[in-house]
Length: 321
Image (cartoon, rainbow, N blue to C red; front, side, top):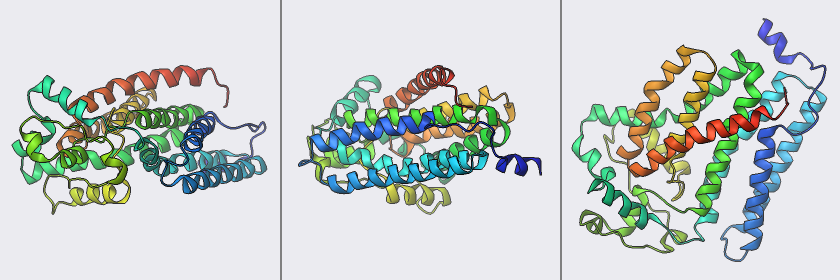
């Protein structure tokens, strides 16, 4: 009952401006809008992308107005939830911009070969073909979004005084990754191997596919037990929103690293130890299902730590509680 009362209790001193995570969204929106306008004739869906941004601004403004009329925890939560939900719109949007630039997968696949003497993404699932292990990998990969929601809701319900900060760290980190994906067009093995031809990949030849992905979004189906429940969940998610973009660094690994650090910082060790096994499975699964090269996953881990402490530093400079 106390939680419900607090949920709709009117704030005595409501915050008057945009929250930090909304400013992060606005900065990303303006950057990408400039790119779209600058390359208007080359961007295939430029008008739709611009109108999409108009709708995001309008929706954000509408929820801001609702909060100003009814300033309480619930309307704060609605504002943060909107920006979190919109990430699913921003993600494929990166492909619409980065496909204007030459693809770089031949470099990353080549570096992978130099480091390991093979393509781990190609050999991993072949060396462990069991149905049980396949489902374990897909479970790990599918746990990404539930992990985000769990940490997000946990901070709102049990660490409300830190909710604004946690929301900023998560959302701002996503936008940093999206900026990287725009200017570093790497698609990952599931797209590049098909474009480069599997015979070339098997022989250690990694051709430059140039602007192949400007016109094509074809990818290989994920390896594993195709009748598995979690396999089907991962494939359904890929079919719904996956694009040839966002391979380096792995945001799956990076953001889940941030979530793990947030869970540790919350002081709730149960939350941390619940997330830990899913985090480990997720990191491994990104290579197993050929979504990423190993160097993508390693870079995701490192960038996740760097982004967490960077965004934590900036969040402490902002007084929005």
